[in-house]
Image 1 (cartoon, each protein chain N blue to C red):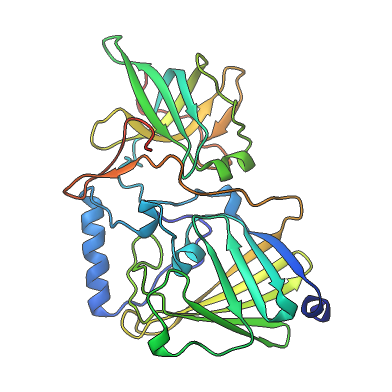
Image 2 (cartoon, each protein chain N blue to C red):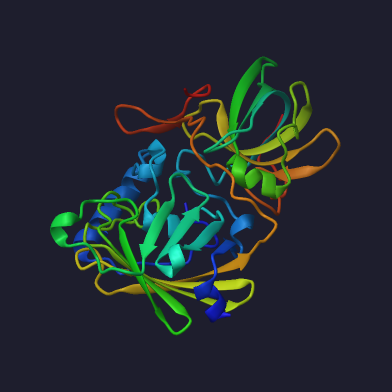
Length: 139
Length: 203
């Protein structure tokens, strides 16, 4: 094999074992409260299929029934498509259930851990397998 | 934050660099994490690209065996290994993200030696390294679809002893490397270093 390696133009495409199933770190996640997993019913406003992260803009009703827009961070496009996501996995107007680690500063945003799609399928926002949609609070 | 596949679990830091890490952790707990290069969509650098970010890597063996090109599906992660020359002289080197890499074969193991990595200051997302960081990779294709990369970090200023870990890669002939450049960076830091996100896509 090695003699072939040394005499041929060789291209290898490899992935770290376990790599595609883990979060793809691009920055510190300290701004999110990893010990607080909350679940909300939400309506999709926009899905940003982008790098270095994809983002889901959703509308969530607060405790007073007022619509609030939340920004939810997912993994990057390059990883999401290997985790089963597509550019139109979610679309504006979709009714979904989102589980997230909220921003510590109280801003309406968080790290999307999992989502239940309108058809009932659950996807992870950070890599398979999807974390369970347990909630410490919800509305 | 650490990913489960991270090859290194701990680093034997010198007291000076242990203090730097302690301060960075305190800052992070206060909402002001250390701003690694990739926070600004700059290249992660060789050390961090081998320890964080679970993206595939592509290896090109080219120029009649005189050069090997390694690309990781990560922002700007591309570097060449020269098998036909020694390291450049000290006065030719300058701080780089991926450094000056030379290689040679030891049997069926490719040994890659990299120096001049002063453009970054973190082995991962937080652990400090110095401009003396020296990385040796021993790449061994142990079977048709398995490549092991024994990675050694040596840093006379930051580490009390060299540290080695092995990353294991699997061949994926049906994958393509995607473009991973920043088109929508919403991570923000205010003037006090507090980390948050922007409310909409950034230009």
